Image (cartoon, rainbow, N blue to C red; front, top):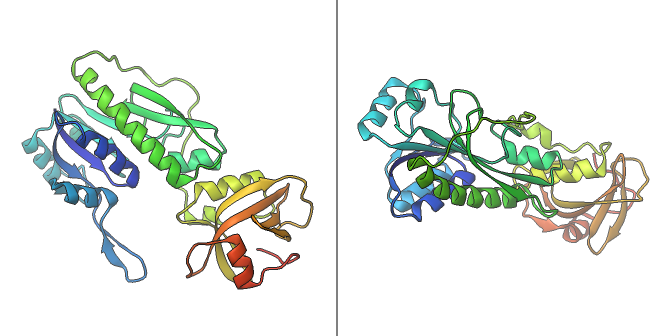
Length: 308
């Protein structure tokens, strides 16, 4: 099958890797976002998908506007049978969707219609979901509204954070895609409309990563998981920004929110609006990731001090 792949993130890389394992998949080229300035030096940084495509020697296109007529002409010349989309970052319009005879198929990191939108993994963690999954969907002009070809549930484990859950869902999504593609090509799958309660997963801005210690410990821990390892849920200690990368909730804690109430071998406990947060791993501003014990020793954190 002649395929054009569209993707940008690390999730998309995992899907692409599964496609590449099957020799019958002829990847004509990869479409990904243009390189963007990043880091302190503001140097141009390629997307994870571009890096992978370069390693594999694949043709790469980086249109500023994927629906622009000049890029649609390129796709028509390439003549893919199907377009595979995974966390690409642009909405595909009707003229583009009509080019491949077998349509455009999206690998989405949720059980649609739950968590439609660009940030389903982080949203599921932030809301404390115990289960999520992947959906293989035939795309239409809406945002994740097309009919479903296949779905698979994935458990969210207590220790999962954004990185680990992305890896799980990317691998499962890729495997489900390569199982579904040949069946779709043979006409063995009838797309079914999405059913159930609709929810949305908008892009979560960095400001959402600021910890409010008046929130419950359970919600704060979910926030830590959702933003770990990047950009990192954060707080302030002596006017220094501190990222919290690993934490667990603890019951039976009663003190003003943000107060350090205990220091133990596992880390330090901070009072929340309800319960306490056992902080296990942190990253001080402009420093390396360290255990909470290392932080306590290096920054002289003491019981009774306040995080803001």
